[in-house]
Image 1 (cartoon, rainbow, N blue to C red):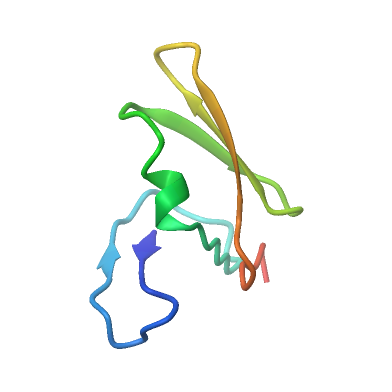
Image 2: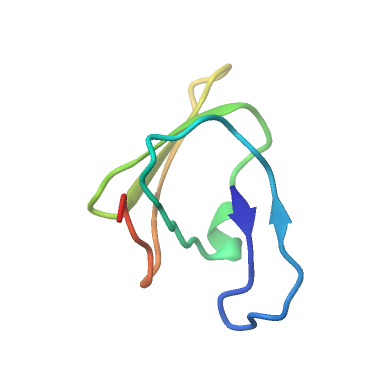
Length: 76
């Protein structure tokens, strides 16, 4: 998982290993202002090939559906 500024290639990025993958390359772009509205907690995240991400809190009955932005790539 990496964070980056899609408008500025020279901006600082952060990376975090979250698990082994399936060998495909994914690029999911979310607007920071959409993700910053999510309440803190542990979430299971599923992202469809149609560009919709489903965030489901593991401890309370709380869910979010957030669209990915243009330029996202699912398993390319």
